[in-house]
Length: 280
Image 1 (cartoon, rainbow, N blue to C red):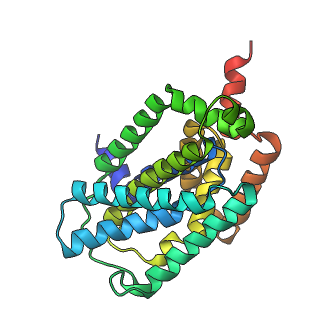
Image 2 (cartoon, rainbow, N blue to C red; image 1 turned 45 degrees about the vertical axis):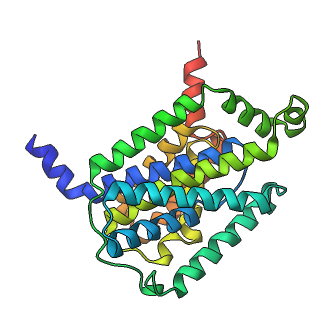
């Protein structure tokens, strides 16, 4: 027991970050399952992080209220973003949503209420490990239940063939809007937890580099697999610490792993599990 407590004391920050990263990966997975390469999760995360931090610092709201409000705000922003970009597909959608993320970052850099480029400090550190992993469990359970509904079937049909989806009466625009809004809410949850687990946030925490990491987690784990997204986020959160001895060569090693997954397991790590499951 003492060994476990010592391990937690040494790695508590990493353990908490893995939980937050897993929630972020699930948020992008929701959009990818609908066939949307919408890369605004870091922006939704940042919006929620600042909303939650400002409410905690200025209004002294308790953690549950700040998390709920932050998730709702980021979900509404995501739904509003869905309307101007609903006609875009593929790389055009990716570029548009990356642009939105940069707009959010620049605004946060220039607002007094966000602390500008210096960020916000003194955020209450009340997002504990049980809170983070309890939130992850709730999100995973909710997505599992949702995967058993007609909505999930409509999402899969939209991803595979929009014309066929329209032919059977599926409102493609609504499915895309709902998916982006749901992903925004989950990313907002992750952002609020991140703010309350980090003491300090800056606009740089929610830039393109963060969005790139979230996308890589999903690609490595499995683009359309929620379980794969969690696996990818967990693996690539632990890996930099496990190979810290490589110093400046760590990024090269990460790149080799990503290239290997794309070449030998294009369906992600989740596809390896599925292959073993169907093997006689």
